[in-house]
Length: 305
Image (cartoon, rainbow, N blue to C red; front, side, top):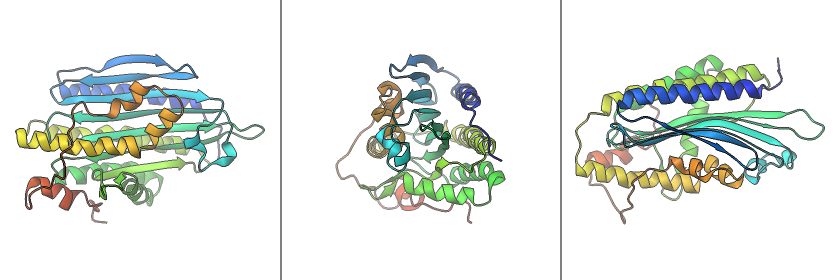
């Protein structure tokens, strides 16, 4: 049974999610805290950016809530929905990226979002999107299996096919075509999610949002005290370059935010504080660095299904 989309309930959930994730990550770090930056968007709406820097565990991280609106849909949102061109719209979501100090701790990204447009003389059109993905620098199979098991457990109550569908979508989406390699070991990615039952769709989005920290925190705690040296740090900074390339060239959220007049500082908070690009760098065969691309960054089925 379909229900009217409840934008207020979605916004309240997203603000609670932002707070819950920040609290858990602060507890993991044990040293630094997230600063809170409330901002307004002149064209309509605003948000709350939460940023942590120079922590014991996290070199930089951001957990951003935004609720923006406009009178005309931006080009990035109407390409596949020409019937919504010119419609008033609202978009809200929580988006985060965590960049750890230790190269043995993966970078993680998560996002859950809600979009609603109101065409003239028509019913509101809504959809949910989001997911999360993991970007290791030094891979551990145990971490990848845990990450994907948690993602599957969040999806399964809503349909046996959803995990596989959104896992493959994630593998396809977070792919650097110009490098011919995945950004990381994947996870979930979904967009345009609308089954016609708002409450059920909202429940699914919440299940994904709530499961992110359950997927990431155990991985961080297992690896955050792993010994490392200059070699591992330099490799981490080099691989971060791939992250930057994807976000600036392909990421839909980045493109939508910039095209819709979003707050640049919040949109680009996902970029790491330090990064390096080495010319034509090739990892020596048989090393941990080579195993990252030879074994882990291959779109594997981590659950053996």
